Image (cartoon, rainbow, N blue to C red):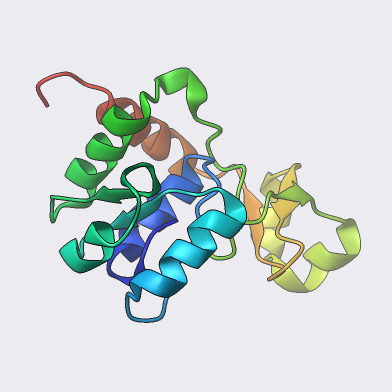
Length: 152
């Protein structure tokens, strides 16, 4: 679970396939602790006051400003390897697992050009956002690989 100061980190973790709750209100250690306990989550926070009020196993103080450094800190802390990623399996906005899109929903949600050039579409059941395997997929795969480069 990422607190409100870590929106980019939450989005990238979701795009990598990790179930990541993004708590948008200003950080409040009582609320964050309750959410962490209710869902058995670890709080990712930039706020010393929040982390100081959580049990040691409930929080990780994110020390970096740059999202790539934040991601690498999370990867190291949780011992995540490249095989643990499920790229583009979750909605970047809602965190829900994506499902195959039905043809009726595509008519209004996807431009004709995209529908003519792509066969497989996924969508979020919550926000109805539609995803497809566009040119961004290979760029994102390279970015995900970059997360695990030693000394980068």
